[in-house]
Image (cartoon, rainbow over all chains, first blue to last red; front, side, top):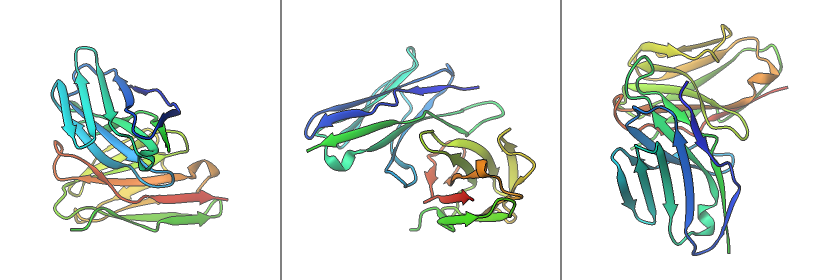
Length: 114
Length: 113
C-alpha cells in the first residue's frame, strides 16, 4: 500500500506571507507528483505537477521535489484569502498493476487571513 | 473545451435504494477514474478504465458497486442497496493517457438517509 502523508493543519498565514505545504510518500520508485487545490464542497483542481528533482515555478506557486528524501512541497508566495482551501498531495503509481492510479494524502487545510 | 462532467451533482436517496452516476470525460481522454471522498479525507481510488476496459477495482468496491464504460466514452457507477456508509462525494477524473495529468469533474455528492 502506497502511503502519502500530509500535515492536516490547519495552516494559517496572513495575507502576503509564504505558505509552505509538505508531503512525504512511501513508494521510492514514484516519479510523478501533483498538487490539487480543493475548495470546501468542491472537487479537486490540479494546480501543479512535478516530475524531476528540484523546483518548478508557476506564478505564485512553486513545487519542490526531493526524491532521495521522498519529499514534495508546495510554496505559495504572496498568499491571498482566495488561496484558502485544502491542498491535496497526490503521487501517481508509475509501474506495476496500479499503473496510473493516484494516491492522495488527507490534505492540508490552509487559511489566509486578511 | 469542456472539462469532465458528472451528473447528478447531488443525490439524496433512502437506504436500500439503487443509484447510478454518470461521468463524461474530456474528449479523447482514454483513461477514466472513479474515486470516493469522505469528509476530512483525500480521494480514495475505486476503479479505472482504459477505453472500455476496466483495469482494476479497489477492495473498497464491494459487490454492490459496479462501473461500466461501454463505448469507451462516458462511464456509469451504480451502487445497489445503498447504505449510510456510502454517503460521500464520488469523483470522476480523466487523463489522455496513463502518463498525463488527471482532471476531476465536479463530483456527485451522495447522501443516504
